[in-house]
Length: 137
Image (cartoon, rainbow, N blue to C red):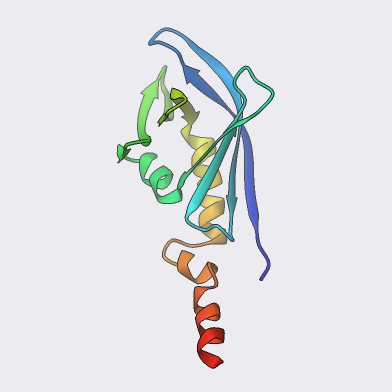
């Protein structure tokens, strides 16, 4: 089965305080062979990128309304007249609040939804084929 990768480079902002934020180069990526997940890699003052993986549904919903709990929370807001989506990420290594522009995130998400429409993710995992092969033995 052919796998598709949908990537988008964009600039996020790391929110340091209500008055201060710094630009953070980032890459959004989605793979059709891992259909439920989105991957976000960003560079913060280090040679090694920081990678986060979470549910695509969380980001899709978070563009419209607050969602998520625990390690990843996502919600839309406006800042200086721009529509943005905020991602609060928590890990043992620390917490980060990142801001992404909604138009770019939405356009990228639409591309991922064309590659693997919502509700069809399970068919991408090859579980049915694997079961058929197992049962055919």
